[in-house]
Length: 494
Ligand code: NAD
Image 1: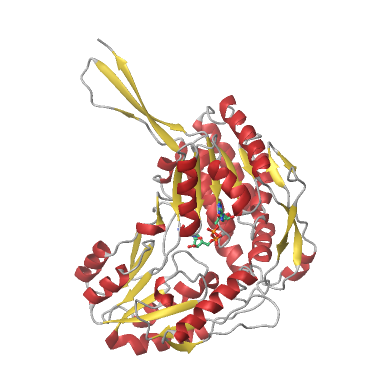
Image 2: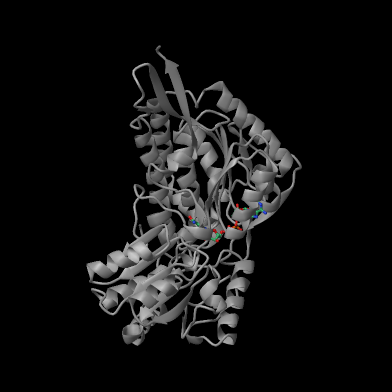
C-alpha cells in the first residue's frame, strides 16, 4: 500500500452510486424509496441507497429467470464463462483503490485491511472459480453394460446471495464465484449497512462481459428485500451469510414457499485453545490478540473464547494485553490505523451492553471496555479474564473487540469447554504434541480446526460450520455442490 496516498482527499472526491443493478443497468427502487448510507467513523451520510422491496424482487427475479432460460450464460461453454469471470476478477483488481475506499467508508474497517485483504482475496476467489470450472468433470456410473448412467451437475437457476456487512465484498465473492461459474443467474442482496461495493460490482460485471440479467444487485433491508427473496416462489436457492437468527428465518421462508435450497454460513463463538506446551507461547498469544481484534472483532470465526491452560494463563493474558493494547484504533482512512469503527451505532451499543453484562456477571475486566471518541463508533480492545462457560460473554456472539478468557485444567477440560457452545464454525489448538493436536482436532465440533495458527486458510480449503453455525461450505470445489443439481440420465442400451 502506498503510504503517500491521501485517502481522505480521495474519499472527498469519490462518486457514490446507491442504485440497484438489474438487467445490466442501474435503476432506483420501483417505489422510489431510499435510505441513508452512513460512514460509521464520523456519522456522516455518504449517499442515498435504493430501498428495494418485494416489487423490486419480483422484477429482478423475472429478469434473472429470463436470462437463465435464454441459455446466454447457463449454456455457455465453461471455457467462455471462465474467460469472462477472469475478466471480472481483473477488473476488481484494477479498481482496488476505489473499491477499498468504498468498503472502508461504508463499514469502518481500516483502509490498510481493505487494500491488503478484502480486495485481493475477493478477486482471487472469482479467479479461482473461473479457473476451476472448465476442469470439473462429470461421472459415468459403473452400471451393467446394458445401460449408461450419466451423472451430471446442472446449474440451479436463480440464486439469491444474501450477505452481511463485516466483509461485504469478500462474503459476496465467496458466493458469486461458484454461483456464476456453475452457470446460474444471481441476485446479490448486500447488508443495508454496506451496499456500496456490491452495487459497484454491477458495472464491472457488465464490463467483463457477464450478460445482462445474469448478475443483479438489489440493495435494501433484510425484513423487506431479504425476506421477499427468501419467500419468492421462483428463486431456486438462497446462499446466506449472516447471523444464526436470520439463518433460521431463511429455513422458515423456504418451508413457507417453494422449498428452495438454503446454504447457511452463520455465527460463531470459536475457542482458541492454548495449551502449556504450545511451541511458542508468544506467537500463540499474538495470534490470539489478532484473532479477536482484527476487523474490530466483527469476524464470524473470531477467536472470541481464549481457552488457556491454567499454568500459563497469566503469561498468555499479559502478552495478549500487550499486543491488543498496542493496536492503533482510529480513523479508518489513516493507513497506520489497525482497528477501525464498529459498523454502526446499533452494533457499538450492542457490544457495550455485552461488556456491561460481563462485568455484572463477575468476569474480571483486565483491559479496555470503553467507547473511545466523542464522534464515531469506536470501542477499545477489551479483555476479560476469569470467565466461565455459563456467562453471557462466553455463550453469545458479541461481534466486537471483546475477548473472554476461560481457564482450562488440561486438554480434556479445554476440549469440553471448546465444545460447550451452540456454535461450531472454527476452533484452534496450540500444542507441540502431535497426539494432543490430533485428539483436539478430531474432538472439536467445528468446520475448521487450526493447529498452531489462527485464521489461516486458502480459497482451496472449505469453510463453514457445524451445529448452529450453519451448513454447506463456501470456498473450495465443495461450494459448487450448493449451486448445482445432480442429474442422472439413464440410457438403456438393451
Ligand atoms: P444479519 O443476519 O443481521 O444480516 C445478514 C443479511 O441478512 C443482511 O443482508 C440482512 O439485510 C439480511 N437480513 C436481516 N434480517 C433479515 C430477515 N428478517 N429476512 C431476510 N433477510 C434478512 O447479519 P449481519 O449483522 O449483517 O452480520 C453479522 C453476522 O454474520 C454474524 O452473526 C456473523 O457471525 C455472521 N457471519 C458469518 C460468516 C460465515 O462465513 N459463517 C461470515 C461473516 C459473517
